[in-house]
Amino acid sequence: MTVQDTGSRARAGWVTRVRRFGLPRYLLAATLARTADAGAAVGLLLLAADRHDGATALTGGLLAAALTAPHLLGPLLARRLDSLADGRRMLATASCAYGVFLAAGALLTGRAPLPVAVVAVALAGSCGPLLTSGLSSQLAGVLRNGGEAERSTRRAEGWDALTYGLAGTAGPAAVAVLAAATTPLVAVLTLAAAADLGGLLTLSLPRRQPQGHDAEKAMPTRQVLGLLARFGPLRRVTYATMLTALVLGGIPVLAVTTGARLGSGAAAGAALVTAFGVGNLGGSLLVTAFPLGGEPERLTTRYVWVLAGVLALTAAAPTYWLALAGFALVGAANAPFFAATLAARSAYSPASARAQVFAAVAGFKIAAASAGTALAGLLSGHDPRWILLGSAALVGAGAAATVAERRRLT
Image (tube, rainbow, N blue to C red):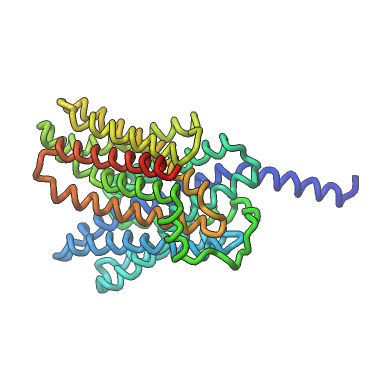
């Protein structure tokens, strides 16, 4: 065997290892980046309170808004990602930039004029869509490099959904623990470091193979939004996602009011929120162990029905412990629903618009969830049982609409 043959075999073995372990590295990078994104708003609120400059609520609210509002720009940012044959560098840059600007915003808060800190945080927030939906849009390419079958793809989408659940739980929890043990500034800087590490890991992912479209001809954003409105499966998945996000965005508020109604105090409300998160993690683990099978749009509708059912059961819970179980079930039902929506976005998106579709649906979802949180706050003086029941009816109506529309068109 010649030296050249030995070198070729070594390179082939290295490529095989890269492809084989691409998914674990993707999941680790995604978890780190999304944990930073999920915990940053809480960290900034704590930081504003720690600096107590006389306008704590205003400062914290502006910083949190500056972080989340740019997510609505996701489709515009994702168009560039769709135009690239290899998006690793853009995703890695976005994750590292998120960490740098988040750290800058934290360091400037209370030490520089507030608008300067807000601008730094907004720059971090503008990278947020690429840490979430942008990364998810690349999962199919990572899997294709490994020759994954449909069942393995669904399992990977379940793992991807799990990273969101882990991030949503671990991010705020890590901030709370670190802020209590050290300072809120240290907590936010730790999140920034996690985002930077996630970005470096993103560079090590296997290169996505060409998907058969001209890298210079990514679909214009206006056409992508038109696609979401005109193409039946994407349209139905999108409005089902928005309706459920509207309801689930109010879950933390409803958990607090439910705990108060059952006479267990504020700590009980926090436990109900935790139950939702634990249920979501448990459901995500089940989805990875037993991947979803079937057509993604129908799966989405099925789990919208399930969410409506468990919301109604939670509304009817007569005791605190049954309410605890109910909120856990809502979280558990959300996991396969979210995995189904990820599968639908991947299955129905054209290659020239995949990242934009992921980002657009995610942006609509974030907007709906924010509206749900605000609406639940406005209704917090009313009996949470009726609000939960109304939420169940709204989600059920969304499921019924998808079924009726599909039947009308077939």
